[in-house]
Image (cartoon, rainbow, N blue to C red; front, top):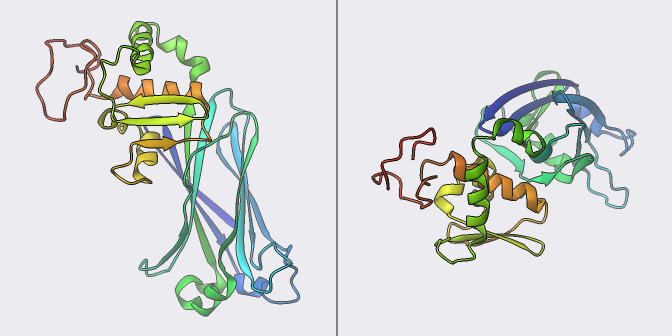
Length: 271
């Protein structure tokens, strides 16, 4: 089993496209191979973040007659940062016209522990074998494509680089509480009993928030995020306001894209 990893960085988001190649796949789908037989490989995303993938050609459930290709992926971290990740899995035809995929709905918190994605019923083994010419290449090779999106919240180290930004960040933290009702927020995020309001057009500049919004109805205004820690998500929202050109860090108002600046401030934020 060979592994190829291609990494790209989009602001605070690390995107890893991982390609797993399994030769003679069809042989391992046949009896008497045990259901517990699997292809296994370790991979390293970057220092402190590593993982393991296990692919079961005949599935993992002895109680069902039908064979399912099952994929178990774990990600481990030793980083001091808070880490959120989501995993998308696909098998693509060689002509690029067909795709079987399974997508993660939310980011998961990975701090100081191992997180496991159990995709036990990804697709039936028979489905792949019947369309072998589409999905299985020379030497019986089957390729799995995983896209692992990782967001690192470096809260523990943020104070080193944000002494200048600290007054603005404190003011943003108070603004998001909206105790005065001055802000006209149009979306809300809930994490347990914690609630966070925000301006959709401002926070969607952050790739993690953008991913959350894209998976929901465009008219949706309430988002439940059970897999986030409240303090980390609050920092993520503040980062969004700090980075967005649609929010003035001097007047503290949001503006539409293409609109004139609300004041004459010319600072490093482009407000």
